[in-house]
Structures are given as structure tokens and as C-alpha cells.
Amino acid sequence: MYPWLVLGSSVFGLLSLSYFVYHYFANPKESYWLATLAVVLSLTVSFLCAMLIPVDIYVISEGGLKSESLHVSISQEQVQNAYFILFATLLFLALCVVPHAYFYGEARGSGDFDLDGDKRSCWIACRSTAVFVALVLFLLVAGLNFRPGRTETLDRAMESREEAARWVGDLLDQEHGGLNAVSFAIACLTFVGVGGWVFYTAYGMAALPFSWLRGRQSASQQRSGVEQEIAAVRDQFRAVQAKFQLREDGTPDLGRMR
Image (cartoon, rainbow, N blue to C red; front, side, top):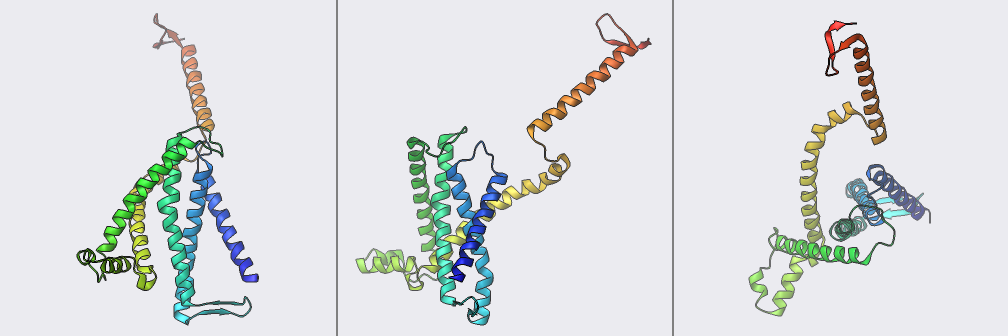
């Protein structure tokens, strides 16, 4: 009971941290419940995948993890199953939940969001997500077909039903429980993510010094500052008008001081 309590508390802490990070950076006027759910779950699963790496290294080096006080015993097979579950969940979130939330928000547009939503936006999001998933699956199958270590070819799969079943089994790596196929999919997803991170980070690193110099102000604070500057300029203009005589067009004559 105690290990499960620790695990549940840790997962709850990660969910709370992900929720705090999302609400810190999200615009409240454009946020909606489906986007919150997708981002929080994606961040939590990503944190769990990263936290599993030290456990994997320790289990491989020591041959297992045993704790008499916690009554916990972790083997390499259990770590492998945890990797498979987390990676499969991450693929489901990245290929289904996150695109659906994105297309749902695009279909609804900006404005106030409620918890119910409308059926039309949900239907458009489901249709767009289905097209996106079909395209990704096609590219994934094409990539798996040409990955290293393949023993079956597509030409032999056309000969008989047994050859086709063997080709599908080799494609999905049934010999290793599909672990290589999932790892390949995660590698492709990571490549796309790293490409986007590099593209957007280049702008962020260039704009970061200017952001520090400018500081963080709300819209009302910026407008108040602009109004104060305008009032100061008007006071200076009145002081100049009071100091110099005016021309016929109303502008101060700097050569004739009062």
C-alpha cells in the first residue's frame, strides 16, 4: 500500500506542476478545457519518461532494484514494460489527443469557451484528426518498412497470406513485443520535436535580451506609461509656449523670448 501511495502522490505532483506551467504561459481568454487536458497529460507523461531513465540505468547496472522498507522489487522486464506503456501513451497523445485539441480550437476560433462546446467544432476536429492520423500512419509504415534489421520484404508478402502475415509481424516487431516499432516511432516524433525546438529557439534566444531589457508589463501598465509620457510632452510644450512669443500660425517663435 505504501509504494502505491508514493507513486500516486508523485503522479499527482507532476499533474499539478504541469497544470501550473500551462496556466502560467497560457492566455486565459483563449484557453479551453480540451487544450488544458492535452497539455497537462502530455507534460506529465513526458516527465515520467524522463524520470524512468535513471531507474533504467540503475537496474541495468545493479541487475535489479529491491527495497525492503518500501517492499518494492523492480526488474529489467518491468522497466521495459514501463517504457512500452509510457511510449505508447505518448504516441497516442501526440498523434490523437493533441491534434484533436488543436483542430478543435481552430474550429471554434477565439472568444469565450464553455465546457460543453459545440458538436460542429468537435466533428470538424475529429475529421481533421482522422486525416492527420492516417497520413502519419502511412509515413510510419513506410518508415518501418525501410528500417534496419528487416528480414521480410514487401515483394514476398504479395505471394501468399502466410507471407503477408509474416511481413506484418516483422514490420511491427512482434518478436520483441513491438518495442522496436514503438522506439522507431518515438525517434521520428523526437526528430520532429527537436526540429521545431531548434527553429523556435533560434528566435527565442535572439529576442531574449530585448525581452529582458523591456521587462514584463501588462497592457494597462504600458498604456499608463504611454499616457504619462504624452502628459509630460504636453507640459513641456506648454512651458515652451509660455516662454516664447507665438507666431501667427500658433507655433512658438524661438527667436523672440518673452
